[in-house]
Image (tube, rainbow, N blue to C red; front, side, top):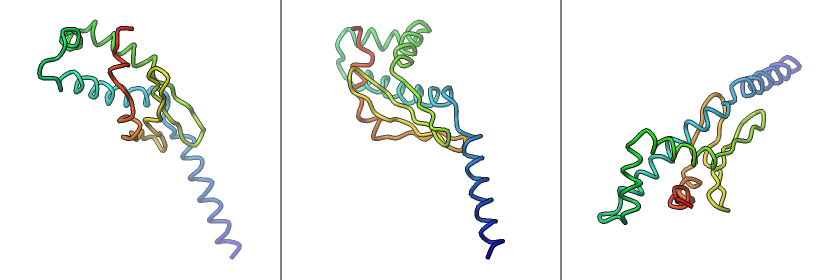
Length: 128
């Protein structure tokens, strides 16, 4: 029984150490979230059959390097990552609304679709 308990404690300790060592860093989260947010923004702009002129201009701007850089900077300002040693969370904040959009653990970043769907991406890319 003592050997079994010792093996369980050793296994638990190993899993904890693995979780700590392999916790994704902030850059991993930002890269994953940026990809999803860019998909949402492009989808939002493409969903209009007759988009307003300013949206047509934004869509055209997204195809340029400067346009992508502008959206990239807006996304950078909206993302924050919190590290809890065993796992990490990423929040996306648009105006005064915030949602957890990803969880990182064991070297992976998993997106949370509910958090992504809760955001108003029009506010994120607004010119204000």
